[in-house]
Length: 224
Image 1: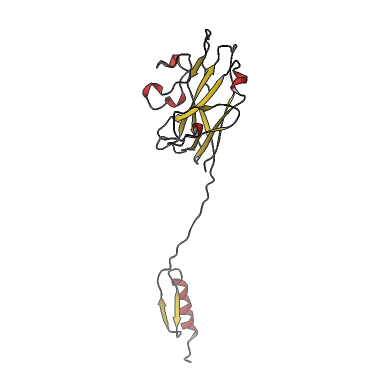
Image 2 (image 1 turned 60 degrees about the vertical axis):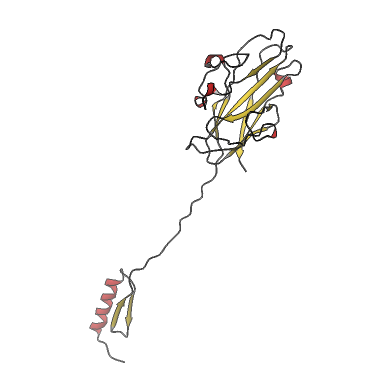
């Protein structure tokens, strides 16, 4: 084996230290130095975002005010279509009374609930009342009904489930049993499609008396 002086070995070590930051140093036969080039690599970073179900009651009061029955059954219904426009001003309207149906003015109308999906997943929306209509309204054959409609474009698409039908415009009983109103309520705010309306239809028989009211519960679970 050829002898290598201590000075040569020292110089090789110095070179190795200087180039080690730029690549791999290979010493062949203790006399040749070569560099293999830059080293690169890839990596993966993972993040998990938990789905959260949350709703906001933008509007949570439907007030039909007061009136007389005059010996006849009365049907009270919340304003249906906001005078031909697509939304209820995000639910900000006031309450009024019009027992023959809304006449197109905000002062003569009871307005629906407005529900906004503020979570980050699609939600199934259900509704129930604290008691049956025959209890809180009284009289003979009292009735209370609910249905859903989009307050923003396609917030529920055609996934409204009143009376078991995937359509808007069908009334279902409002009672102590939870009724699914929308089974796929969108959570996206852009485009604007995360609000629905809950409309109410109240049938008051001519033998009912007194002030009537009931607590309505709106629930949400993550859509399947």
